[in-house]
Image (cartoon, rainbow, N blue to C red; front, side, top):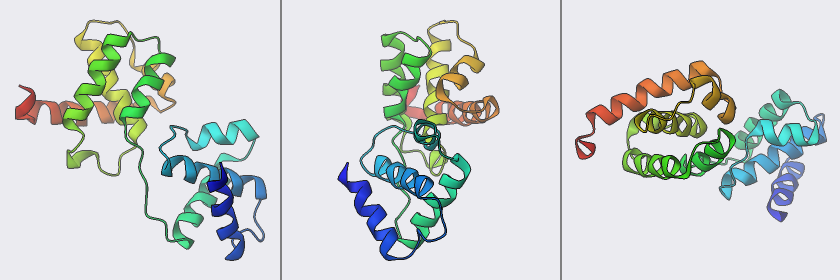
Length: 169
């Protein structure tokens, strides 16, 4: 993964490293590269692996985005569905249908700027309920590593989009 080295090198040249923890800055660089190349890793996961302070790594990430003038890169929610389904022991058929549903509604403006992980979790939960697969919101939220309140908020947004989407009816 040479790309994170180049991001780190740019930050070093601009003097962004001085006075900051190298470990957290590297975590921020790795996270940035993961987002660019669409590898589904969260800042929490990367921070836990290297035992870094997640809050400070998030600050370093925002600093890199601002100072290096990097436009916000958002993960596509479809890459998270399989990850959440595997973690929550959801069957393959439900996961595939969740991906199809997500692809059908992904162009809705309601989801711009929202956490891709929470959108994927909400769609997966809705699909599980449709197939009468018993799974709790807490289990999906835990598998997605998000707060249950975030999941509930995304559930209401996704349900509104599905109800208003004429192509799904």
